[in-house]
Image (cartoon, rainbow, N blue to C red):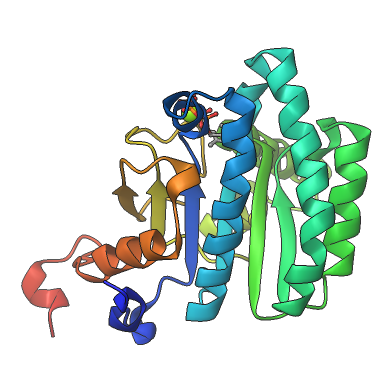
Length: 248
Ligand code: IPE
Ligand code: IPE
Ligand code: MG
């Protein structure tokens, strides 16, 4: 039990793990508390997961923190989430620097409240020199928004004569996405028992291994991450080939 971590094969780690952190509200309800208490409790899981991933040697950890669709929640909850974001980002910069972790963000960031944008920008700048792992927060993110944005940007480059339509290949398209420069996630985790993608990283997860766990996000700990990685490491990634071709 205690040595789940030592069972992880560090030679076969996902370079990039993406997580849909879900179940805060149901966790709170289960504990007879308001939903916001669930979000607050989820911060500890973010901390633990980030630390565990960095310790193992994962290069990128992307956390889905707020979707474009989440604006449709009650105003009180949206405000509480934004306030929690600012508070957490400010508090965690020290630890990120201590652990040599760089912060990045993907999403329609210009539409976040001014305060959130400022806190985010500062934390990104203050951790820009860190090299052990990149922690990517998906904020006001939706994969359809990201893809539309990429299409618009490529179309305008074609219009202005800086790009030909023939030159658009997978690499060019990937570089027009918010995740440019990052490897695609080999492993996508969703907590809380839901088995859907909810508009997260559609292009990038084309060949990701999907891992669903009933654990609510506030209960997710280092061992939960090791368990997910061990599951991933027991899979055979075939990429269209036969098992015989892959198992050499
Ligand atoms: C995930 O937990 C956090 C965010 C989407 C911001 P939820 O708030 O979706 O929790 P449930 O799904 O209602 O339990
Ligand atoms: C997905 O969770 C978004 C985040 C984790 C930030 P939701 O709880 O919003 O997704 P749905 O509404 O159940 O699909
Ligand atoms: Mg949810």
